[in-house]
Length: 320
Image (cartoon, rainbow, N blue to C red):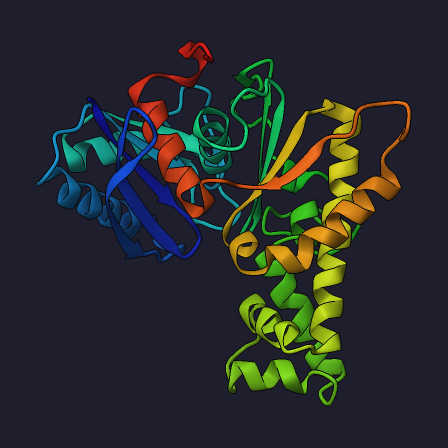
């Protein structure tokens, strides 16, 4: 049974695992991420991979990274939440690790894992959305990942939803990510607290004097705080509106929702998202309606998908 290592580089953490050919993680490790220091990220990735290779023989290493990946899966062309610009990540990691490395967009990796081993099994047309620091996206159509001509396809978080709207980490304004992501939720909570300090007290109590985050909003919402519930409702509304737009473009069988926010607050967000998807679906009643499901593989999807891509390039795999 061949083993590969998958590494998921996020905006706040590096997580890695040794993965079997059936998508099972048999060992894992984690490091904190400093998104402002690419050199340190590389050192941390090499460190965590070396740790895992000390006890496991592996045939490949796949890196799932948040950002635009070159078509040859060697460079990070751009990342909105990590300081990568035309960065030769695979080359640099190979020099540190001494082993071949491939890079995959993190949402693509998660989508591939769900398609191969999760809730997407048996479905040829799947969209994946990952809700975390940002909003990642991936499209599988006819069993193939959509990469685009230059490797930057399916960056769904940077589809414009509000003209000249909120600033996004990509440098543009009004992107979907600026309304449905952990960063957006924290920003909206902090803004609400500045304007309505009394109403925001339950959320501020959860924060304990620290800047408000999405986790504080979720904790207050679970205690019944109406302001926090309202912020999560707004998040779900934008999520559902975006999914309806995607349905008009790609007409998938399934949208899989993953990422850290889903695991923490999915039950508070997804009912509203499903409601607003249905309300805004064009041609409703005269077309099949897609399913919206949470990721079966949870936060492990990026690791599993990157590892599977390292074993066999995704474009070469024939679905069962």
